[in-house]
Length: 157
Image (tube, rainbow, N blue to C red):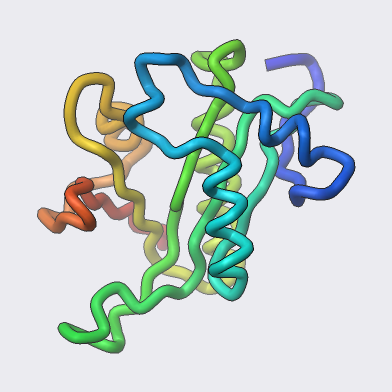
């Protein structure tokens, strides 16, 4: 990371192009959707999406989007309301510098401030999966699948 302190910033007209320019490594493209798709999803699901640029100094180094208070499976348990990390994209040029860890910690702090006791995340299984990254941050597997993705949870208490 630069000498400045990274922070999360809302996506605005001023940083939109830089946020959309975030690209993961080519070998990771099958694991995470492009930022522009996330922003479209944030627009469509505005009540629950929390998209943020990951900024260090004046440079956008990544993108993270949380989901806030979504009924996980209303058919099974309408009281099972969850929040967590929906998408995390760290630009290829800025990976392995701590920005992903920072983003997860910033999102979990936001969720704690909103009263959440757990944070959820999903990821694509297979080669290059971010599973070791999330497990290393304390997430644990739930045994659930969501759209073919692995589900994990982190206790925030």
